[in-house]
Length: 245
Image 1 (cartoon, helix red, strand yellow):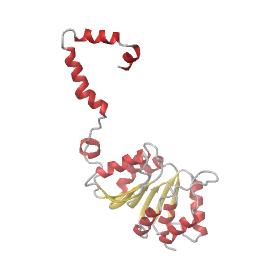
Image 2 (cartoon, helix red, strand yellow):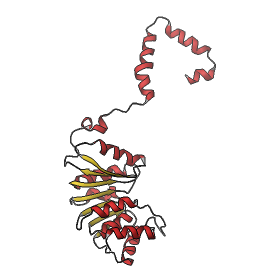
Image 3 (cartoon, one colour):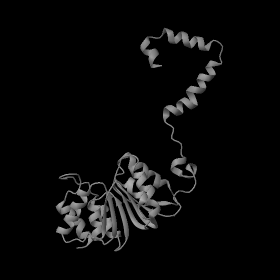
Image 4 (cartoon, helix red, strand yellow):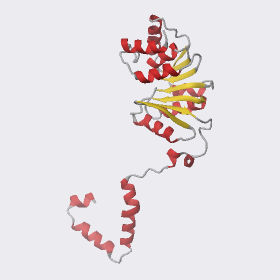
């Protein structure tokens, strides 16, 4: 059974790998992302994912030397059992039952061809996964960022989109963005050399205060008697309007 057959079988049976205890949840990648993986993975590729699920089965079926890291060993056991029941070898998969932010800093720096970030989606999870996985990824290798509909994952996506010369958007498949690594120099320079970080973010209220309200207020204060007039007007306002000011 090849990896494309496994994708079809997963969506025919829809096994639920996720959750503690009895499980019962399925947070798998979309079929088009899994088909891309099945098409792209070469046998004996070194691959890695934070999280686990349907993607783990595709990595296993394609013959990658794969590592999946997620905190719940029950999920790993369900995946391995489903693979065994369907005659799919999973002995090429190294399951690590741990949190990625605790374990990634201590893993050997083995070069990777494909890395999938699909684990802890709360801040700062995806950024930590990227920080430790990106240097291990081969130049020309692929990084997948899933669930870009979520603000934390979307920021990582937007950062990588802006990193011209270091990353390139290879493909967008729904809420999964696939990037290709272009350079080994991922942390070159400072904040002002990173296009994403060098662009100031000013909200309208800040812009209005900085360029209109504050200069006008300073100019009015220089007019003799203006400050007293303003105080008198505020004193005569109804209390609700005065508080709103």
